[in-house]
Amino acid sequence: MPSPPVGQRFTPPAVAFAVACALAACSKGTAPPPATAPLSPVPPPSATASVLPAPEEASPSSQAETSDSPDDASGPAWLGVELTKAPPGEAGVVVRDVLRGSPAERAGLQPGDRVLRVGSTPVAQPSEVVHAVSLHRAGERVGLSLLRSGAERLVPVVLASRPDADELLKSEFLGAPAPAWRPLASVRGSLPSTLGELRGKVVVLDFWASWCMPCRMSVPALNAWHDRYASQGLVVIGVTMDSPDVALQASLDMGIDYAVASDPDGETTRVFKAFALPTMFVIDRDGKVRDAMVGYSSDGLRKTEKQVRALVSAPL
Image (cartoon, rainbow, N blue to C red):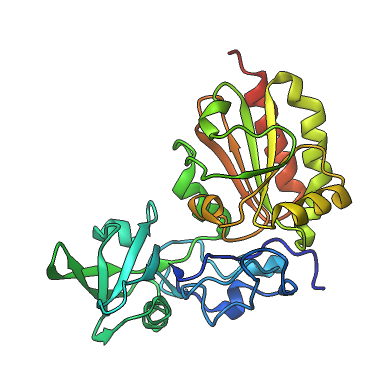
């Protein structure tokens, strides 16, 4: 295995995350084994803007492809949308979500828009959008032909360099209310039916998988936080796409002491955009995201614990 891996990538079927950087730079490492999870891990495609792969381990260099400036023309292009296939017989590729602060948001793209062409290139699959965007560099302007409310329009977009994984999550979630999770199956410990039921608590939400080695490396720290701060109102929950029986056995093997939930259809994982594993969120007592971290980093965990300690120590 490469030097300590920091992250892994995943997506539900037929969804694309249009970030357009060469996968050789974005996702190096060992792919997970054919899996016991409902979504079988597969090797990544040729670019991270294409249909996103199931989670896969990446080396620390996986985040090094991003540039310091979002408009640095030396880097590969990033659009910043989540895509899905159009219904059978209908043209284009549907924009499922638009990331905050992305080139797509600045250009005015909206969920529900349908991308018909990137420049002069017609597209019918998310992977085709990926390929067309990947032919450009950050800082270039490209015209997107969109179908919106039955009318076709041309929208110019100035592409940017892809942020690193932490920056991407923070720009999307930091300071905003945490998304409502979709139905989860309780595997171990107490799990409320909604995230809203945890208002008044500080929540650490950790997305992991049984085959994910950096996820296992995070467990001792998460156990320690659970032991130290639960009495002050901290709730640690591990969420995995592994099936409940696999998740239970893995949690026992890994020595997990905190609550564990199974997300077999991947919907909660998707709304939190946990496209790499492990991905960790810190949510304050008001339900707002205060921190996000992708991958394993001992220094990152120390900084996250400092944030957790400040939140649980703050006056109610």
